[in-house]
Image 1 (cartoon, chains in turn blue, brown):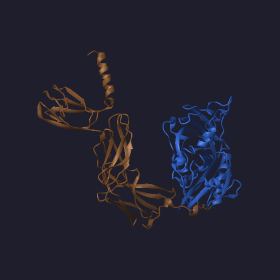
Image 2 (cartoon, helix red, strand yellow; image 1 turned 135 degrees about the vertical axis):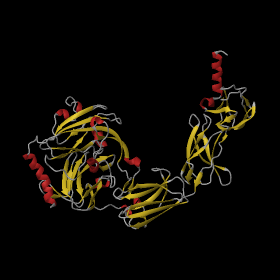
Image 3 (tube, chains in turn yellow, orange; image 1 turned 180 degrees about the vertical axis):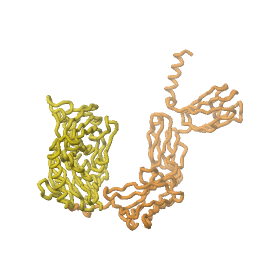
Image 4 (cartoon, one colour; image 1 turned 90 degrees about the vertical axis):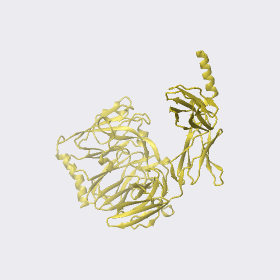
Length: 309
Length: 300
């Protein structure tokens, strides 16, 4: 049953993408994002509860710059309920959702008063003109590749026919290296045109942060997101990786099917790679999810998944 | 006097008494044939201004040292007093008009008013501007004074420092010019906190009782967030006059509970109860302290 549902979840959107004309029901979605300073503690409970190691807040807290969603015209910060449940909103940045066929207008403002540096947003998986690439390339890139402090830029993106899935976005400006290391990345979740959204959607972003191996900017159980679901719900895991290392996504007590139909409970990904997995929940209990590169797990890349009856 | 002469005198006065520049003015009014307020405390160097709000002429003689001469109606006169001491003052025209000026080397106040032994006590006050250092002293059981810290006053002479509260002790600060009047804050001896959990129906009651009953503290029920591996404040109540409070939690709750006493919500815990297991109310080890035997690894 679980496998059949898993298969349906992958096969139907693909079928729908072929059968349904691209213009039907497409929307233009406006998203307001800013790069803002934030003081971030990777280990709020001050401990690695599994190994019994304790940390002082001064070892785990640093000022950084993150992407945050705002209301129209950047009037005030906004965290949508599905972003809270997905563990997204600062590190990683806003969970940007769309459907195949949608136009996306990402209105970006650089409010970096911490480093006073240029920033940008570069999106994977979607289509855009070079002017919306968000990359700094001398003699070629436009203003969107290097948005100066206090300035704004609107990226125009199209969720094309091949864009269903999960993709990363990140800073690709002159400050790219330190900005990504500080947490300036996020996930773009594009559903098929007629695809039913999962009951629960979780973002798992593997990245190093100040010597810790983090999931969503946090390290060790209790600090990383505690994802919650109930038996019978469909759950979707949006997995992305940033940085220089290879990671393997593993969830205890569960398995899913690859696109080819093979059962799987661990899947690898390298820098800026991404994927999503889905299943219908049938296993109550408290489970671990983690990167199975064992040194990463020991340095914090591990979290809890709680399934209630 | 020429304007130049006046300026020179003013400059000379400023150089001679640098403390005056930052000192405070204290005002005593004569609204009728009495002084308001009649008892005044100042720091050495402060200037006291006597303002005649009455319809008739008054004067002021301070401690037989300073004499105002006649102060006409709606006029005033002021005088700086540099030497600590007690200075009774009178109106020589109406001898029944009297008051007292206390000039001190330093003022001292203690906050909060009623603390639990060991809780930080904030001692603050003022010294003459330019005072380099004040020494904090606590009364000793032998009747003498023992050192309990020091503070560096700001440029205006104000200072503030904290020291752990000791039951029954008085505090004072000393400067080269002398000591402040002592203060004796109310300090409650070490508080014992008893907790008990009683189960019944859909709810369990967690009863807390503090001995002796401390005044003005907040009792916080903390529950252990088992998926977050940390204590979290659940509910806050003020202890009643007997030092008791009751919390209600769902009977089905399966975690650990403890109660902390704090001066204010979110402040440091002054006293903490035993940890109880909510399943059966038994005392349990703090789950925050659970470590793997020998620092072993979690299995995967």
